[in-house]
Amino acid sequence: MSKPLVLVVAAALVDPQGRLLLAERPAGKSMAGLWEFPGGKVEPGERPEQSLVRELREELGLIVEEGSLEPFHFASHDYEKFHLLMPLYVCWRWAGEVSPQEGQRHAWVGVAELDDYPVPPADEPLMPRMRALLAAHAGS
Image 1 (cartoon, helix red, strand yellow):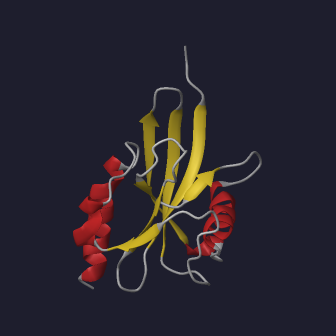
Image 2: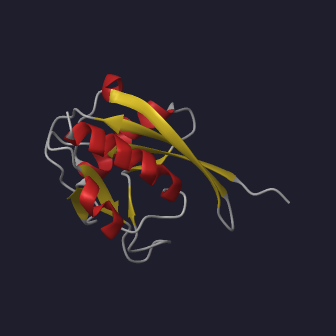
């Protein structure tokens, strides 16, 4: 029997110091305590970029232009009850300060600290590419 496909979209927000923003999954949600890229489900009729702009505004109070979202990679992961497909975009520019709207904790994480933040299984294959991106940015 096939599982439902869940399409979510996420952003790797990288600040001028070359740090990545991660958000902690809150208590009461599946995979609580793990750290993830900000984002969320793509709603019917939305393009992934539209969803990500909306999610970043709703979750973090950030204003992001679609043109600031660079396609980076994607995750395709088979969870027990669904299959997750997640395009990941890199974003270097936004307006506003990070202000979690749903009470979740967040952290700006440098490449040396990434291993200190456990991520959901779907995100694990993305982390080597993210480390390389952050390391390259730190060296520029």
